[in-house]
Image 1 (cartoon, rainbow, N blue to C red):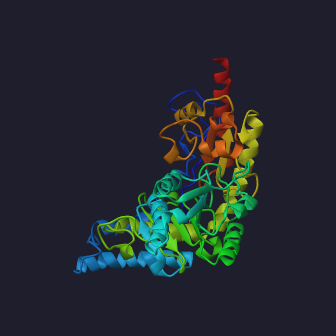
Image 2: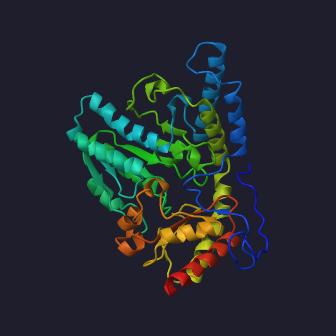
Image 3: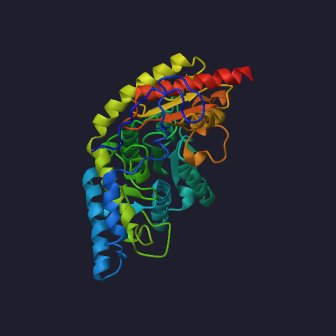
Length: 417
């Protein structure tokens, strides 16, 4: 299934704004797929009937409500089949952020309801995580839960030795991103799960693995058994589905309590009338993303690798952040330009027709340095000068080449100021 229409490069001398070099594309190039993705046409088609024919409240008992309920349950079954779980273990949320909140708080609440005090629980995560995880950890600390941060190396990979040391009899949850949204580092989930399993045998108690897989569906296998996760969170907006819809997938052994109140929807875990249209579109997008993730990743990985080499050659000041091998998300390029203001560079590139970012969209409102790069490298100069390109399924090396021309032009201009 095609995700994005192929764009033709054309020879131009004018781009409607300023004079540019020959062979630079005249239309905009989107390199911010980690922040948002275009809606898959098939997802849009699945959503349209929900605004007119299937508009009922899925909790209602009349015919209109029944039709809406059928849409929701069909979507649940399709997602369950794609991720290889039972439908009752699929919960629709309002996005990845709510999914992460529900997972973390819900796991702790369930344990507390069974008699375990907050002070007798530990949670492990990294300082590289999305704000929806890190800020939830702050809430846990306010409740009395002990939060530990496992060490990572310069590439952003978790130290397995350090994790082994951190796990104790009071550890109940490890929360990590499948692939980091800024530097693209893919964590070794099987190795992490092995450590947790060893701890379970040693301490005779469960240690759950929560995986934030928001960036993964287009490029990695998200079937629950493959990830080894007990709790897996997806965001439809990151894989060509509608914004405002997420999916929480649970293993059979996982138990959580709702952290919201006001209704019994989604088996009581996520109260509030279901977003029927969004759920219909999300299911189509997730199924399509997982259907051919491997071929898509192999194709774009080649473009990414050539693009990294081209950028580092064209711009000697550039330093690559993250890993250099298959432990990097297929579509991710993240560089630092020490001593340069890359927020200004992003604005410059935007004016030239290229959409890029400096870090995670959810972390960008306050400006400043990348906490991910700062944590991984301990380098202030690199952390305050990051530039992130996240490619789409049809991105080309020619587009990266054209961007590098403008970025080099900007650097020359900055040096002359």
